[in-house]
Image 1 (cartoon, rainbow, N blue to C red):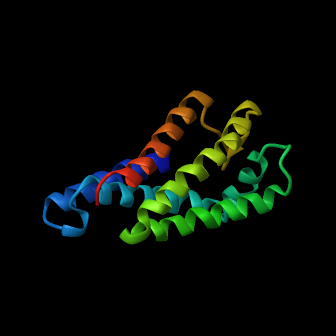
Image 2 (image 1 turned 90 degrees about the horizontal axis):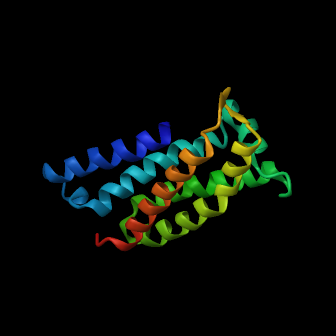
Amino acid sequence: MAPLIALLAGSLVARLAGLLGVDALDGWQPALRIGLALMLLLTGAAHFAPSHRRDLIAMVPPALPRPALLVTVTGVLELAGVVGLLVPASSRWVAGGLALLMIAMFPANVSAARRKLTLAGRPVTPLGIRTAQQVLYVGVALLVLLLPH
């Protein structure tokens, strides 16, 4: 739930700042970049947090090799995406790549929900809700890709 809140609140606060005169945030595209960056800062950092890392490794579908490496690589890509989103010149390309990354990582969420795993001691988000969240996350990344600066 925290990533969703970060995305929505970050986007709305950034948009409000744009409306109040912060030129760099004047528009939905830059506001969504900020919200998406905040969300990815949380999710990317979780890949390395002791309270989450073991659970994230367990979420990787059993058929995939080297789950710890996959969690590390995806965490690094998410954190690199944060930086790329904050640079207007790279933000569109980065957003497109992040949309693909989120689609590629979604099977881990499906696997975790089907296997009734936990994340930081709490059950993972039910599959229907998680699917809706994923559609939103990918949709926001695509808006960053497609909306004018």
